[in-house]
Length: 238
Image (cartoon, rainbow, N blue to C red):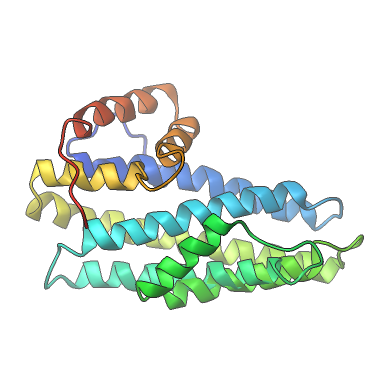
């Protein structure tokens, strides 16, 4: 994932840009969790963590619906979906950790995303997220968060980030090439639109605008050019 992206040969290659954005975001969340081990307010961590989970769950659900589902009789695609399930489990375990504290609650948008993943048989990923959620909600509303709790929180966030990176590497190595080979360009553009634009959200651009913010100017231009292409493609339902 560390490669520099200078062009998008196929529409699905936007996944490299999205993975780079996720890499920046998850490392930022992990850094905040690491800093939290030394004490202090965990509010900034919680805000960043919630946003990371919201992005991750939308991304996984949309991939399963629009990118890997069309790849029938394809073991790498099924393995990718299984990895999404594991990510969802870890993530929702972290979210449950958050929700046990005096100051409740993740946002409704994250809850909705978790439920959608569970309905898409992403229970394993949902369970992983729940581990961190349980710890955070149990402790984050208190005046003092035990050092042991902070260490556990950091370890769980780090484990989720590693799982995310491993999944992206597998996807880049095995799944994207199959999409290029089997899926026509116009259909790829439709997939990419669903990954970047959430038509059901109050702000449909909440994904693409975030990705653009995480990218260097040259990569941002690649994203803008691709958007102009997929904007001309009729919207297909999943």
